[in-house]
Image (cartoon, rainbow, N blue to C red):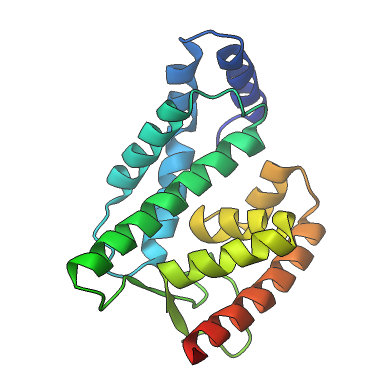
Length: 196
């Protein structure tokens, strides 16, 4: 991420204290990072019909609608933005699936590119749709919220391991360990969904 973490945190604090002028400054400062997240996320998808700018702008509307307050740090802000992008992609997949009368949900590859260069052993060519990944992630969040947050930032947010560590204030090694465990869990959940 290219934006200054201290400045983002400072602007969040100002906005939380009621300074309405802080939000446009915050978005201007974080815009390139949000575009990079959206670009990586969309690059991993297939045929979802959204453009990077459209995804960022839809996420912006969710950010504006949230009225802040719950973001005290850069990590919380980018976590919320990643969740917003996730929800947008899931909603888009549902609309697309409904438009096709239940068939042909938006498909995403679970290869290295799709999960932000993740490396499921032996599963580089496996694929699952956005809705199945979302469902599996909800189950993971019930078991281990921190792992789910890491997956959300990596998969839906498109952040690298280093960026996740920086955003969450964790060591790279801890993120790598949790990411490995989360991938194994998600792969197992997706295999079960495919078997059903």
